[in-house]
Picture 1 (cartoon, rainbow, N blue to C red):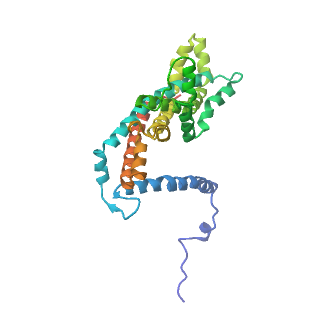
Picture 2 (picture 1 turned 30 degrees about the vertical axis):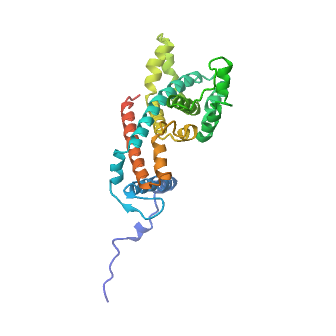
Picture 3 (picture 1 turned 60 degrees about the vertical axis):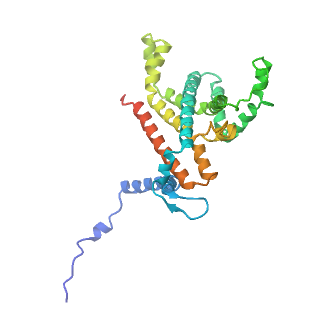
Amino acid sequence: MPPVRANTLNPPAARSRPRSRSWWRKQVGLLFVLPSVAFTAVFFLAPLVMTAWMSLHDWPLLGARHFTGLQNYAALLSDGNFWSSLGFTAKYTLVVTPVLFVLAFGLALLVKRSVRWVGLFRTAYFLPVVIGLATSSLLWVWLLNDQVGVFNAGLAAIGVIREPFQWLATTGSALTAIVVMVTWKMVGLTMLLLLIGMQAIPEEFYEAARVDGASPWEQLRFITLPLMRRTFALALVLSVIGSFLAFDPMYIMAGGGPQNSTITTVYWIFKAAFVQFRLGYAASLSVVLLVILIAVSVVQLYLLRDDTRY
């Protein structure tokens, strides 16, 4: 009779031991995180990998694709339209960002205090944010129309202009009109971010400053501005990324004109992909734009970093 071997690797006591509460908490936590991970993988990581793969091919809309390596990236170096669109995008970003920040900061200061009717003003300032960007662009096309627009009618009524002015006929006036529309549309969102940052500052700091005789300007300079450094970084990164990805206002209001002078980088990517049907080349432009946005965001976060501990 062969000898009986004891099961020393899996003793019965270890197999029947119940799971600890911390183990179950970890499993529940993973289940809660799983939808977000799956959503990010399907709608961000997979398209990103696909775009990078397409950028290495000559990928027409119809027909077979061919691997071309880095040929698309070499082609964009000599693409004058791409660099022109990137220059206009940078110019638009440099114009609209300070306007948005200054106006939003002023509005946030106005609606910071909890006084009567302040909720009404907060809602009024934020209301344009809920309108779609394409819808607001179409709205402003009619507002700026030289025949039926209210701006020309108002300026003519007070004697500023004698003839209807075509706001979208020149590069400067078109850029101005787009900046005004985007400011009207997005200033409420930036105001909300800055307002949250202001309300997060403890009121005790201001009370101590008032006891020491600090004026409102000194409270703003030495308390509000330094303690809102992280909020400024967040709002600035979101604003710059949104400006670099601008497409709807230039496409709907100006159509890229006059003479293709208001074509942004995303607009040029759209034309390469869906007008010229060069999907591989458009993918390489998208990858380059992503790298530029990452670099710009890293620089902004580094310059506005706040290592202060309270």
